[in-house]
Length: 473
Ligand SMILES: NC(=O)c1ccc[n+]([C@@H]2O[C@H](COP(=O)([O-])OP(=O)(O)OC[C@H]3O[C@@H](n4cnc5c(N)ncnc54)[C@H](OP(=O)(O)O)[C@@H]3O)[C@@H](O)[C@H]2O)c1
Image 1 (cartoon, rainbow, N blue to C red):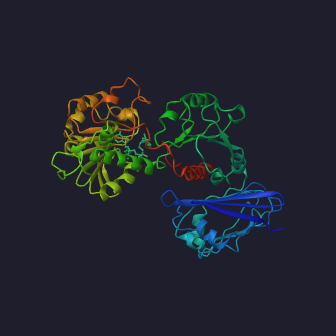
Image 2: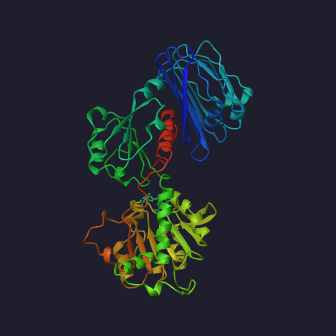
Image 3: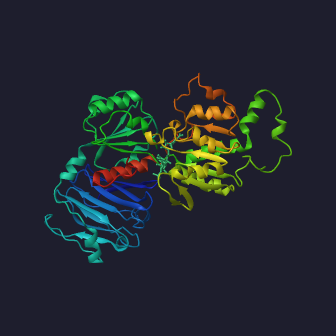
């Protein structure tokens, strides 16, 4: 009986569910994810009665495009005999798998350009010594690095449990298809007893108590995928990081945080915050309207020709920079390692004494860690010109708030727009509420991980395949 086929595409992820006679196959393709790396896996959860599958031409081309798939992985779990064909023209109509026994076949590290013409056949009747053939035999054999003829991997993976948070709307179907069962959990409550043996925990805005409880009771946990770019909550919860891998959600917040930082910079230059203060008093801020000097020296009134220094030149900075450059700013960066990134000159911290005095707007996007604590201290604030603005969308601990407030009160700085604070929510007693020219933004820059499913799915595939994970700490 031919397999029933239901192939769906969701964003970058290609899901297929194949079923026949009550048995189910699931297939997930992960093409061209994470900067050109990609791969795909076929994962059988039962084999009885499955005769084969056929993928539609266009889906096939999209889902299985070999372009950019440098580190592809093909895993056929359970009995596989027959052949799987991926033709160069993307026509997969003849692809076929037949299931006759139980075995696991892992093919990993398929590399381009060989994938362009890949065609391989598992032709042997014995899984002990299968042979591969390809239109380019030598390259295909090179590609087929690992062959596992036991179903150990399948067994280990089949028992795996992944817990995903209900604190955000995840398209759970996009992470289905692997040999892991998926379970929702409440991030504000203790992990339920029946989920305590989970292997993987995806976190997002978990309460401190939830994480502390998980660290104490989830003794089988092997990997935490945080959806936060800076998972300080997870790192402070007491997990044994020699046993539990932690990966961050860096990349999921690039657009939102970049947009917020841009907004805060424009607010500073165009003084919207001051206009609003006047509006609330029904007063016309005449000094801000009408005829104005164009970019007077020693001022920050426009991004055009402004010298913007981004401290913490990572993923968010790379998304922000083109917008600043587009508006005419000159951008430089500071990070741990110096070098040129995406065409922008990035310095290490030893260059700060030279860079800070040449800065009109300093954008802080540093992670929170011991190494970044009070990175912007009084000494460094003093190096900034009196008209300079500071925008912080990284972590509050990277700025000495008292030193900043002192400088603003003395008029030694143009202003500051802070999205993050040493203590959040900012206590009512904080002097920052009333510090002149200080804009308070309530940790509002991120908060909406975008593309979380693609990151989880790609890392889950890597985890099952024993490969390095993206965004590992
Ligand atoms: N406000 C919000 O809502 C919000 C949302 C998302 C993220 N964040 C914060 O933004 C931070 C950055 O996110 P991202 O995705 O851009 O992270 P990322 O890609 O990891 O970039 C972090 C950058 O900081 C640099 N860095 C780290 N430690 C440093 C140190 N001690 N001195 C100098 N530079 C240092 C790194 O330098 P190298 O590249 O040389 O290693 C890297 O360039 C996160 O950690 C998080 O705390 C805030």
